[in-house]
Structures are given as C-alpha cells and as structure tokens.
Image 1 (cartoon, rainbow, N blue to C red):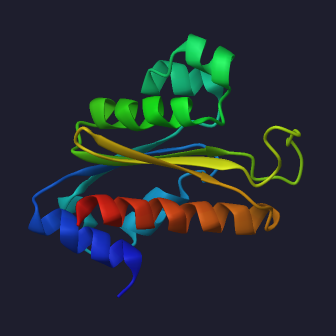
Image 2 (image 1 turned 60 degrees about the vertical axis):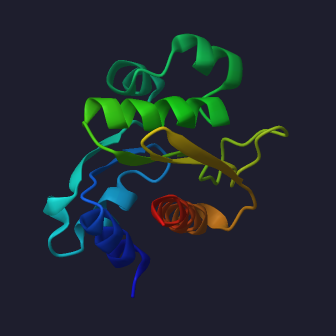
Length: 155
C-alpha cells in the first residue's frame, strides 16, 4: 500500500482532517494526497506559500521569524504547519520549506536542505533533510519524508 493511501486510511479511521503548507514541494504533497479516491473525506486543502509574503499573509508566519531564522528553518515550518491547521481548519498538517536547487544554497543552508514539519493537533515533529539529489530528487525526498512523518504522527 502506498504511503498516501495508508495516511488516508488512518485519517478516515480516526475521523481527522488534513491540510498542507508547501514551499519547495510546490503543492506536490497535496497532489499526491488527493490522488487517492475518497480523499475529499479528509483533505481540506493546501497552501503553496512560495514567497515570504504568502507565508506571512496566509499562514501567519511572523516577519520576526523569517528575519531571524530565514524561510528555511525549523521555526518557520512550525509556524507554517500551525498556520495551515488554523487557516484550513484541520486536525493535522504537513509543511515544507527548503532549497531545492540547483542554486540558492549557502554554506549554512546548502542546496538540498529542507525543513519539514508534521502536526497532529498539538503534537509537532520536525526534520531537517540534507543532501543534494538534484532539484527533482530533493523535492521527491521531501514529499516522502513529510508523508512518513505524518504517518508516524497518526499511528
């Protein structure tokens, strides 16, 4: 069984709802979740927040957080995941923000760095993904990591 199908089963069995807040994954997590028949029973929606302005206006990420830690940070994805649950009125959410590449990396945050958060009500887990597998590989790895983290939260 695919991860997105397993998540759907877990959400349905617990009568929970899901939303996404995606930056570097560009809506791919939402697309995968909604590829499962019946996903409308548990998926409320997703916000693709590529710019900091959208992170602030729709997900309520604070300007201070972005200034102090940057868009690609643990602090930012925590605020993104909370913002998604609030804006889309869900019990669970996943959020991603990273440097997919090929450019944009720094010594501190090289290409391939992605911060991921998964939330189930008040429980939030985060993960820093590292390693450059090329733009497509970095995004695919982030999608799978986000779904695995959500699955673990729901068990």
